[in-house]
Every structure is written in structure tokens, then in C-alpha cells.
Length: 410
Image (cartoon, rainbow, N blue to C red):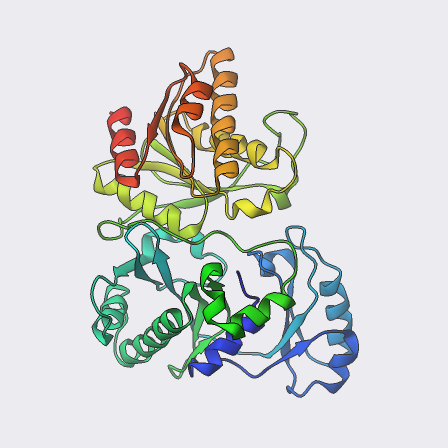
């Protein structure tokens, strides 16, 4: 269960993680009784990412502007989700923005700390700055401090950011969470730290032990879940990539050859190797990049499809996966595409069908490319039968998939 920002920040307050004065806005009339002094920021409360780019975050100076902005935001769908609630929050002047997260590694069954000196909207395009620390023994402040040092923080920020990470970890453990994320953690010119945005994913299987979290499920909206963020084992240190972001070409759907709007387009991050990567979720993507690099390979690019739950329409996931494959293979230097997807059995079947359809289409066009496919919750025999003689290698683990990709790229 993914919480909305205002719900996540309520949990942050309980842990004494600093957040700004804020007020929930259920309708336009609530703005007339706003208790926060202007200027304020109004935020759409949806689970999709990219709210700022989509127009779901607006700064206002007075009540008239606030009412007009709120009306616009209430009527603005972001990835198909309309907000039922807005968050009004005090404006904060940040000198720097960091990224912090605590995630569950479902394979090793242990938490992983993530941190980057570059946070905010462009964090997915700054993979080279992301650092990770696996918590492989009983947690102590040492782990949080190690993360801040790997991030390159200095002076008083080491202690202040370490304290935030410790509180995030305590929240993560006490509430049996899958994710606690602060993006960005704002740093004022005076060195004050502030959680400017937050995401929390609760473990559905543990809600029975946490009635306060279960109660929040009654306030959930029905669509637009935030991107999948559970990650497998993350080996090695963060590689130093020189990457650039390229918006995926919105020109054509792989099957209908009809135009796709920019709002629906996937994002391709270009690197300088010969292995394309298609994943779902930021954490899984970073883990896959790490695994390929650890095996001696060089990623050429990666495409993050985000949460598979957003592709509910018939054939939507298959079509988007085929588009992702098309993007990853558009550079002629790409010799193999590593597809690493974590999802349900039905979603995995759709991904396998997308890979098969894509390769069959390429074969008809007399272009051949290798694919390494790692899925979970699949019937291996059924998938092998569907893929037939197509150039696909199946892998059961991330390390196995990375090794196969590197071998095929040589």
C-alpha cells in the first residue's frame, strides 16, 4: 500500500523527522481558512511521480491565486489519477536538495540505504551519484554515517543527515514498511534539513499488525500507484556513469504505428556501453546497472517503466514493454537487452509476450538482437514454449542475468 505525501509526512512527524507546516485541503473552501502564512505551495496528492513537471505543484502568494491554482490542480489528472486531496505547505528556500531512501531487498531479505547528493525531479537521471549501504547486521548509527560519507557530505551535514537516515530506518522497521523515501531533503543556506517530499510504501501482509496504517487504506484513491520500488540484492559500489537523459521518441506505438503523446512517453537514459536495460522501478534499475558493471559489462542505456500497476488497460503493458525494447535497441551499438522485471505472474506473462512479439517483428525486418530475460512468478515451460527458437536467454537471478548479458555482448 502506497501512502500519499500528506500521510507519509504524518508518519515523519511521529518520528521527529522535520517537515514544514502544512494543511490538508479537501475542497476550495478550505483555502479560506488557511492557517499557513503566504507564500505557500499547493501539491496534488497522487501517487504518480513527476507531479511538478505535470503541473500538479504550484506556488501561490494570496487566497485568490490559491483558489484558482487549487481548482486547476483538482481537475488535473496525473497518469490517469485525479487528486481527491491537496496539500498546502509553507514555502521553503533550499540551497541544496538530497535524495534518501530505505528499501527492502526482497531477495536477501534485508534493508538497503540509498542516498544521492542530487535530489528532486531529476534524481532518476543522476544514477552516477546514487550511493547504497546494505544493512547486513544489527542496525547502528554506523550504517547511516557510512551512507553520508559515501555521498560525500561534509561538516555538520554528516551528523544532521545521518540522524534523518536513522529515523527513517526506525520508521521502516517499526511499521514493517517496504519503502521510506525523502526526495528531496532540502538543505537551507544555514544548513537546516527539511523533508520537502516523502513516499512510504507499507507491506500489505503486515497491515494487521499496524491498525493505524490499515486505517489509511480507507483514504486511498483507486488508481495511479507510485512506481515499484522493491529491489533485489545490490552488489558492489555505485559505478561512475556519464549519462544523459533522452525523452523517449513519442512518434509511434510499436503495433499500431500511431502517435504517442509526450505525457505517455518513456524516458531513455543514455550511457556509453553495449547492453540495453529495461526494468520497472528506480531501485531495481540501479541494482541491474550495478550487477552488469560488477560482471565487467557496460550498460548502453536504460529504460525504467515504473510501476506495472499503471498498465491496467488490455495490452497496455505489452505495448509499453515493446516500446521500451524499441528504445533500448535504437542505438546500433547495443548487442543485447537485459529485461529485468519484478511483477505478478500475469504481468510477467505479458512481458514475455512483449519480448516474443518484439523479436518476431525484428526478425521479419531482418534485424536480430539478443535478449536476456529475468522474470519472477513465471511458468518456465510455458515461457520457453512461447519464446520458441527466438534469441532469448532466461535467467532466474539478477547475477545470472547480468552474467549472461555481459557474455552475449562480447
